Amino acid sequence: MTGVWLLLGLLLFAYAGSMLLGSGKARGYGLPSGAEYLLLGVVLGPHFLSAVPRESVLTFQPLMLAALGWLCVVVGVDYGVVGERRIVTGSALIGVALGVLSSGAAFAAVMWVGVRVLHQSLSTLLPLA
Image 1 (cartoon, rainbow, N blue to C red):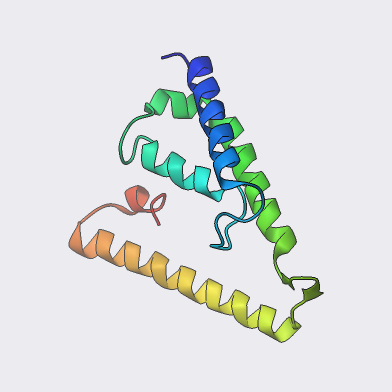
Image 2: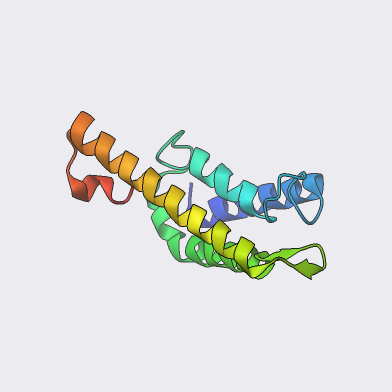
């Protein structure tokens, strides 16, 4: 399958999915529109089901990075706003601190299990962590 046909098929699939889900938030889970396609890409990609070959993923890497950047912009614009009003600065700082703490704990857990249990090298584990 050439890259162009793969891209056209994925665009058609994304359009059909957006018509089913509607606009705005994804079924009330608080995810921005487009996050479900990111999860679908991880599942269909070469790391899980291998439905999309690694060569095709590398071909479309610039497009995927732009889409991921756009998704991050959408999340960042909505951060700190509930409905029509902004949240209290102290609450936002607590949220950021807890996010950094949980990310650090997840990073440490992945590195510890990878090095101690699975005996992997750090260069192998860094992209995963």
